[in-house]
Image: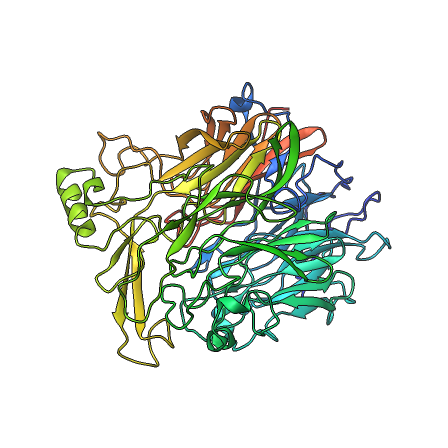
Length: 638
């Protein structure tokens, strides 16, 4: 059986005893009341990142203390994994590990209730390393009993698995014995390039899932097909390919027929949002393969790097908004679209807020996709690479204003000493640099914002009571250089005349080559569209570089959450702390060290009358932080 072991079988309302050796009996956990849990990856199906809980406030948050710690025992022996999980709560607290183990905990104590091991083959490569951002919950409105409450997870080896939420046993009637293979019907598949990293979205009785694809390997890559499955049976209900393959498909006229027939990716690797009442899902797509050269795919290339609204029950296309035309920058839509309501003329307007790697925020009408703040198409630099036709304009939001400056250069070079600054200035000099959207070049292009963000998968949180959207942004310079291909069968971007070589630009001290902050938390007033505050995220530990310098605002992975108590929580910084901020002002109110890197988005819930804040602390393959296998819960003193 794939169920590794069951520490306790617990049916809500009945008492069972743990069979885990000498452990104490586990007390049954009653379902958490509506509105007090964290029911989906982004807090709710729409990814608002907001909790109605208000027990923790700016006045008492400094008293937070560690309530419990749980170690999974999973993943720390691997050379490359990313602990990006955000748990959810529906009666139990459910979490996943980088190896896709699913674990249920008592949310009051952190005691393990059950565990499921999908037995990932560690001898095989997986597209993004070992990573799982979480699981999803579904409750059957037509039945009760066995598997009427389910946990779904997409795995790094391309399976969609359904588990009984009560005991972690596979739901045998779903697909083939509890799972559905996802690596079929998606074009020219290379197994190591195709995986699932984000939890599926659930709209009514349809489970919607995208994929993560290594999209800089070759032109003829796996398709970024998004699929909807019957939550009861596992039967595929619909499939939608972001690249139009037929003349009758919407967006066909933005491709050449040849390009549309061979290109892959444009996948949705970030979480998908759902509006079950409207029967809509909102899909964040990526660039087509390969990322940094589009000469084989002239045109605007719909529906790459777009937010696309689909009918959840049928997969029917409803509307789209493209954030980057003919993306050759790897500026995917990197985060779950935030389904929110913003004040407008005395009313609340249902909206979709889209945070981006460029530091742009687009706020769209949820019904139509039309911008609710002005957006302008502005000229951007042309490509100087033979064969490339960069799109002549790109969309720029007028409001909210961009969260990052449009251009940096050698004059912005920085280092903690004059020598380090001079080295950085030399690295930034001589690169092609005409500001944001300067295309990749043979001489090397200074890329800013970096293709890792701006904002990345951590996304945004929206305090609906204050109309404040909070998101983290990264300020890192990078270089992208194209080189003529020497071998048709080796290297990256196979099927094009070029290979690519790119990276963040660091100085000799190991710090980025522009002045801090390199990580900021930003609060945006969506009543007016104006930036309300900005505050650095974290700090370089004292004495790590030079004892005389205080450096605030460091690199991070992960995102914020907001609470009705007026407190924002954010972890992810390389200094290894979780922090609390005042939602109104951005003032840092509290911080606590974590036992390992906390490169994940926290969550919050209430159990037995107590509000908890939980963060995964396991490190990150890209984060230069200590690895671990911890989940840490904080709460006010009892």
